[in-house]
Length: 430
Ligand code: AMP
Image (cartoon, rainbow, N blue to C red; front, side, top):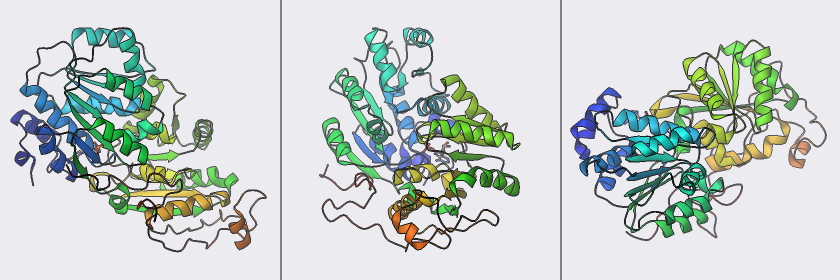
């Protein structure tokens, strides 16, 4: 199956040759014709599946076909994070290189005025985070009354991050007649209600969850005492000669402390999180991509949507509180079919979290102690779950393999928070 057969224009196909995209990914193969035909779309797809091109390519084509004479934007792409907005902006530029459509990216944390100037010059496609977009609307520097296509990318994350009211306010500013495309990795009851209120007779597309695609990712876990994690991590950097590793921590302060510790151990590292200015975040990402730093230490939200091609290694310095975030984290590696490795450092108090992750994945992640870093047999007081304490430590303890069990009430797979455990489900016929 090739891109030629999807109905894309020659000038877009030429751009794809430059990008060296040989074949469409499953989401592209399914979504492009649907969007070109003008349908609303509800797509279950995570970062790493090629979802950006799946909506950007047909969107460019639809706009190019209708000309580009207007001053006001005709397509609006909303994203939860600045990084994701910037990356979509880059992609629009790359895919639309042979078209004369104008696009711009708008997000907070940087000055308003350059964005105002850009909007004044006129744009066809606007990529934005919700808060800053509303700032512009409030200042009357933006007119959304000509929007023909609305894309909500990572809609689940937008809801999780509390953007629902902002998004609804934005939707109320749009013309009634428009095409709506909603991309979401997960599908909760909130998301169902939201999508039903937004989409008109949508086509449904679901591609493999990242955790099934993530079978190309080798997942390992090392049991270790909490206090020794940072030394173990530094040891692994030296032993494995890692050159580019994305490391996840749970907190911003923890990310800073760990980056500093690695620096003291001679491992160039930088932290990326929401307390850093946009300029600092962009610089950190650039340094990491260039190979100037070996470790990028990130919190979940900061890392969301980061596109670092072929990242070989991800480390969970701490396990996430929500099992679904583990899937997002390891989705940073092993992209586009490339193999990758995900390693978790698991302390006594995280055994419950590890079990939740195994339950979600429907598979076991075996714990292998590292020589010299074996966890103490008696966990520190108040530092483990009672069940683990009874068993007397971590070494050799692995959860029995379990499949993701259906929840008898909702029909959804089990999740720690009992909410979002499946992607777009079969729903009313379209
Ligand atoms: P996304 O899921 O949109 O974040 O894309 C993930 C990565 O896959 C990005 O680095 C894209 O450049 C790359 N990609 C997207 N589509 C293709 C394709 N058809 N062939 C090869 N790589 C692709």
